[in-house]
Image (tube, rainbow, N blue to C red):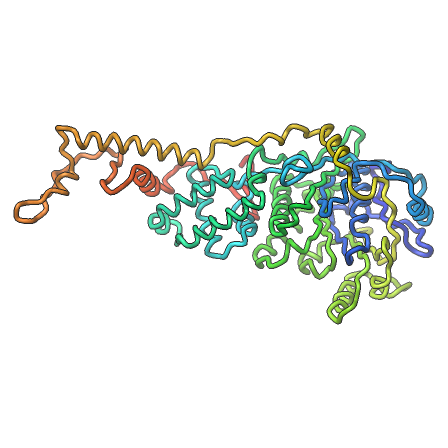
Length: 519
C-alpha cells in the first residue's frame, strides 16, 4: 500500500514512459477531467485513481454505469499484460489487492438503498428531474413554500401529491397570495410524477435518508472506503441519474465545513457520463453548478468529470478542472477535428510532441496528462502510459457482492423503508377533524332551538324579498361550513385563508434548493 502522504501515481511518461506521472494529494481537490472516446480506457483510469486515493486514506464515490467496476472489491488476477505494463513504467512492488468497498444502489437491488426526502432534494432539482416548464416549476416552488411555512414535511411522492391536490382545490386563494397557480400546470406535474414513480423513484424518495458521513468512512487499515453506486438501471433515465448525482454534490457542498487547502482531499467524487449533467440544462442551473464546483474545493472535495469529449463540459466549469487525463479522441469529421484542436489548446505545450497529434494517436491505456504543480500551476502535457490496477478488472459476481454487503459498515442501516408522519397524513387528519366539526355544526343547526343565520338567508318574505338575518355572534376559533361546502371543502378553505399566518420560522434552503439540515 502506498504512503498515505505520498502522491497518486497515474502512470509513466517521458522518454520510454518511465518517468512517474503523479497527482499530488494536496491538489487532489482542484478537480479533474477524464476524457476520451469509447473504449480508450477511461473506466480503468477512474479505477486506478480511485484505488490510489483510497490507499492514501481518501474516501471515494464513483458510479458504475455498465456494471463493470464492482471488481474493485476483489484482488486482481495476475496477467502477463499487467505485469509487462508495471515493469515498463518502473512500478516496483506491483501486487494485487482489493479495495474496501461499499455498494450502493438507487433501487436497492445491487447495493444498499440510497434514499432522500423530497424536502432535501428541493424544488429546483425536482423540477430538473421532472423536466418541468417555467410555469410548472413555479407551481412546485409554491407547493414547497407552503409546505415549509406551514410545517407540512414533503418526504415522499404521496406527500407532494397531497400538497398539489390542496393547491388545486384552493387555486383562487393560493394564487392571490403566492402567484398564479393553474389546474393545467398541476395536472401536468401530477402526470410527470406518475412517470417518475414508474421509473422507480418511489424507492429513492423515502426514509431513512442518506447520511453523507457514510460516504466518508475509513477502513480499519486507514484506507478510504470506495462507495460504488450501481447505476446500470438508473442510466436508463439519464435525467434522473444526472439530477441525483447533482443532488449528492449539492448536499456535500451544503453540509461539509470549510477546510481551506488540506494536505489531501476529504472526499473524491467521480461523475461519470458528465455530459448528462449539462445537456439541455437552463443557464441558471449551469451557473449554480459552476458556483458549487468553484466553492466545494474549499470543503476538501475533489470532483472529477468523466466524459467522452471536453466540449461536453461548459467552459466556466472546464476552467476549474486542474488535473487532466485525455485519452484518445477520434477525428473523423470536421467537427471532431475542431474539438480535437480545442482540447489540445487547454494543455501547457510540450516541445517534444504536438499535443493534438498525440491525443489523436495514443493507444488504449495511454493518455495525455497534466497535473497541478508547485503553486497550483498547470504541469506540462505528457504522453502517459496508465498504470495497471491492483484490484480486479470487470464485474463482481452476485455471491461475492452479497458477501461484501453483509460485511459492510452500513449493513442493515438503510434496508428497511420508514414511512414517517408527513404532509399526506397531516392533511388527512386535518380534513377528518374538519369533517367532524362540520358534522357537529350541521347537527346543531337542525336542533329544535336552532336560530341559524343560514335559515334567514334561505327564507323568503311573502313579498318575494329576502329576510335580513339577525346579528350573529361568531366564535373566532371556529368557522362553520356553508351549506354548499363538503366537510373537506370547509377544511381546505379555512386552511387556505390561514396560509402565511404561522409564526414559526421558514425552513432554509441551499444554493440548489436542497433543505439545509439542522438550520
